[in-house]
Length: 252
Ligand code: CA
Image (cartoon, rainbow, N blue to C red):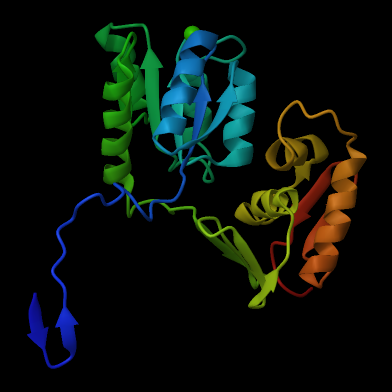
């Protein structure tokens, strides 16, 4: 203990401190068709404090990557629908998904596959079978590498609307919004990609959850409430025949 003019400083030893007290819950998209492996990954990721999104085939995986913009993707190579390398090419070719860290999971050990994966922009490559502990280490190492180069994703702000994912709070022109969890996720999905039109199905996946038995019109009801709570009906635009988008520019 030392005393200064400002007062007393207690020198505390770092005992029993949570490992990562302020780390946001990062969202990991798992694109993998082996269901047992997916179950194991989900279990281990949740235990480490990550959120997970799961896709069991290539097309679903690509769609979810584009819709959810996860913080990290675990990508299998041999997939039904689209292969992992096709997904990789697709994601690296688009501005919105170019920076998402991707770890390839593959049973193939041939050097050429790794070369192809890295040349297409994968960030790391883990060969199956792998231990959960090893994969978690690789995920953390990748996170450390990409920190500072990508958006943390915990704060999103556009046209005066702000979302804080860590604290689960939303604001419009500095007024806090009282949102239900569904409305919060819906707003977050739209706000993260202003100007992008989302279908009702995509918005349901992102806000209500996959496989939920709800009518597409349910989204219309949530949008209506959300517009009212935002205090402005023109921030969320209706895209005729498609769905909705968050306004890209002010005025006009
Ligand atoms: Ca596979």
